Length: 238
Image (cartoon, rainbow, N blue to C red; front, side, top):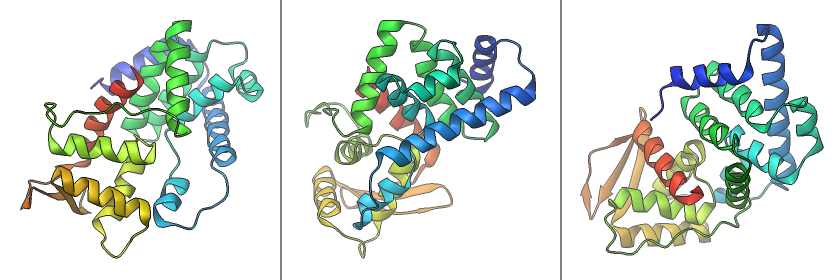
């Protein structure tokens, strides 16, 4: 995984010299626009548990930025002030580092580099928007493919929810681990996970407990889950 120090260096180099007060104001304004875009696109508040947790969990700001970029939103043009799209992602990367969100910073860094190329940036933005809007076709993973059961489980969650970000996936795992919480989609997901041999038990102190083929498995950290999701994102958006 790319070190935060390198992300900060590359983002600051792209931004050039800027007084801190101005940079902070631009970061806040751009972050606010991305969050506003989520409120506009997510629709009315749903009532079922799974749909509600996805509705209430804001995707990474960089993902929302990609959707704004793809749709040619004029408000984004105003925020960029004539700069190239990668400049805005550099602002978001620094903002996420300032907030202590390492995952968010890395998710802003990858497209920041891609958007330096017009064709690569357009492809990435189109794929990211398709994922956010539930239109991205998740590649079918053959049952004999060399992937660990937990990797397959996370891929299944992404395929079922259209979300591949740590915050959303963790909230989905919390629901899956609680047998008292149910709706038709959750039931289908639990059945599909059972076929993979995975059953989530809960999340405690930053570790996800689960069984694998009926036996309790060593808990995995949220950092490990995040790394797996990052790998999965690259496969989906590549």
